[in-house]
Length: 389
Image 1 (tube, rainbow, N blue to C red):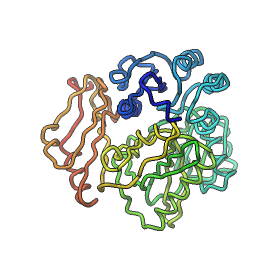
Image 2 (image 1 turned 60 degrees about the horizontal axis):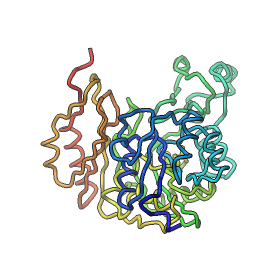
Image 3 (image 1 turned 90 degrees about the vertical axis):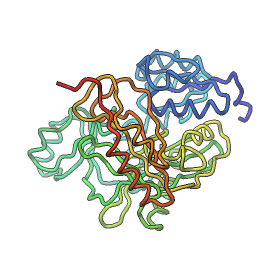
Image 4 (image 1 turned 180 degrees about the vertical axis):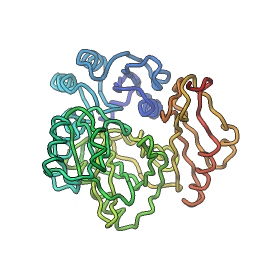
């Protein structure tokens, strides 16, 4: 498929958030025209792509019409209208990852069942249609506390997830069809991003360790290389390889995992796209996750995933208590820290815990990188020109 990288080839990307923006910037190096569809006119990717189309990724007509304008379709998010992409595939459009894979991944119940069917280690789970069914199962002692409830569709960045530890927490149950799983006693949360091209070549990026903001339930800091031992790292990479192989996915797959307090690794969930846990690869790895996605979907040889330097990535989040036109405080001081690389996503409005950008901090060893990352985290604050009342 080498002849696809020509100046008039049109790559369509559904959704234009920060992942879409960074994918567009990587594609520009190969002289690929990029076209983005998003609900928002001023989404981050809109300012850098060759063509922008306003549309809803969940709307059949919007997705179908957009697909007819491009030569290949890929995704920034998995929550897209499956029927539209299946119709486009049936009509001959190249779509990577395949709609059948998207259909499994976007439903957390189907995703969990897939792991179970393929003997991929994941925590025990049950499926429920309503909140009342969950309450009844607890009442009848058919479901034991604590557990995690995840809405089967639509959740992301901690949304659509509720941890139920006691009976009093049952009032916090989320309405809608759900997947309920045992609460794993977590020692560390880790991630491996795997890539697979059309020939079945697979390469994995180094294991990363994720530290979460408990209040926002999203990644606050990412450490690479992870502190887990070599055997655990190899096991995590082997599991990610098994998942992407079983799915026969052409593209990128971020496999999020738990290391429990007994040293066992469990798959939490996967995302068939570039991922927040791979942002550091832009500076710290020979091939970034965004270039690797392009290599995979165009069926090129995959790039080296060798780590150049230890790195810490921190998400730059909107400060609590502020919503409005974005304001960056402490940026000059943060820029003076050696080895810091900033990526601001171009979002005009800051909101509490909204991802406004990220910073990757490089150093000769991981301890130095962590120390510098903490300095940046304390200095840089993303607020708004007007504080929330």
